[in-house]
Length: 459
Image 1 (cartoon, rainbow, N blue to C red):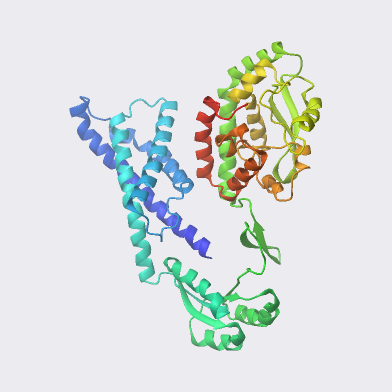
Image 2 (cartoon, one colour):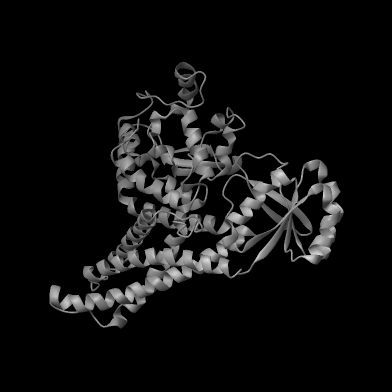
């Protein structure tokens, strides 16, 4: 319920942001139209020539507002410099995207002065919007907007933490009705009759679940929401959700991202990005294919079975960088150079061809993987796909790497690449899974570019 309210409030605030952005657009037009004759010598075109651009602007900014989680943790009073930096970061990326779209569409009549004023006003208005949002939430809190009163049932000492959490989230319209000791649950029906109570939270142990069964049914009959703290089920990393399949209620514990909307956006980005990659690198790929064909015997494309999401096998494609018998030599090299390990990573690998060394250094051998992304086997960003014999040697904890779709680039590829040990890569992959967001994907993508150009950590 709290997370749902948070999302609803965030969406309202994003709409307010869009109003500010539209206002910044019109103000930028007025300012640029006034200043343009003095600076350039002639004014802007009539306003109707620019109105259509509000559609891509609204889409771009709404997209980045979500990615940057612009209204996350609004109840936390952050330093003004943090708000300035967050607004500047969002404005810079959004304006850069907008300018890129204008460039691709060959829209030349939009002056740089107009875009410059728009960027300045958007930045200032986003700061104002962020400040205004906090004020709005404060007013909602003061007026008990959508107030829900919550009664806590449990041990007074341990349940005090729950009450503090509710008070911390009062900005969402939550209010504590107090704590009733779990030994006095018989007084709860009388309490909720005499006092306004919207929800009851039970903070009990596993052995005490049967003791509250009849009471939860009674509260259900009275139309009062019941919640049970699931601390008796030990999980280190899991997020929790509740769902029903037909008439079957169940709790879900998951470690990998489950937000279907964000994952759908990620898939959309993968499709657009892979198509763009295949088109953009078509001619370089043809040149690479010719060089591979004439440099050594064997196929141009190397195919192998890799392990994808939750153990699904798929055919993995890349440009061949090794001699044709490389797979047969792999186990022998592993026993010789890394007998206790899982992977074979050699600085001077005898299996590499001369063109293969260049392709590995520049990561151009990865280009065919855009086809894997387009097919849906992989994502642009995600843990690298391992081979089946590597996965067979995984510990149970290391198998959590398979809980997200594998990717072309990942966190460890911008943090040292081949210089990192296998254990370090696992740690970084799990860190990526536990902290995944669209913003993190964009950060990894942007950092991948210099890592590839300067071949940081490549072998």
